[in-house]
Amino acid sequence: MSQRKLEVPQDSYLIIGIGNNKIREFLSAQYSKNYYCLLKHPKAVISERTQIGIGTIVMSSVCVNVGSIIGDHCILNTNCVVDHDCDIDDFVHISPNATLCGNVKIGRGTWVGAGATIIQGVKVGVNVTVGAGAVILNDVPDNVTVVGNPAKIIK
Image 1 (spheres, rainbow, N blue to C red):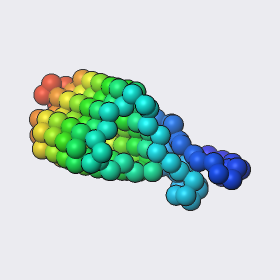
Image 2 (cartoon, rainbow, N blue to C red; image 1 turned 90 degrees about the vertical axis):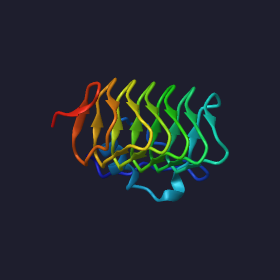
Image 3 (tube, rainbow, N blue to C red; image 1 turned 90 degrees about the horizontal axis):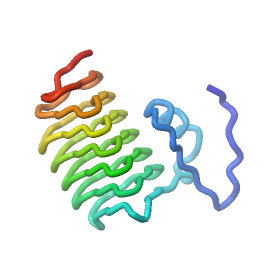
Image 4 (cartoon, rainbow, N blue to C red; image 1 turned 45 degrees about the horizontal axis):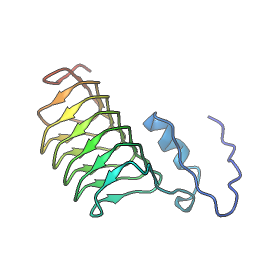
């Protein structure tokens, strides 16, 4: 990738809207944290008792409930649900219509596919790929791909 930096006008902010978590992480390191902001669609419903990190994008019709913590440079895509007390680490992508039930932990760099469901209290590791429509009933280790209902590790 090119090492050339963009000129950022004074009083301007950046958002990296690239869905690939690794590329988003690489690009985010090119600028100071002071350049990044939080971007929330006006039709997103977010509890006032939720923390959301810098560089994160919250799309239309997203619902984030009380006590959840969302890391830096995440994408909460259209119509996903993050229920109460979830903890989403940095550079995570939650795809459209995915549901995280209460008290779910998602590790850094994980991608949760469209329509996936993760039941309450489950921990999903670092750099995991959760296939579209998967139903996660048990904790998932780092660096794997899980698919199906119920979800099983395939690699």
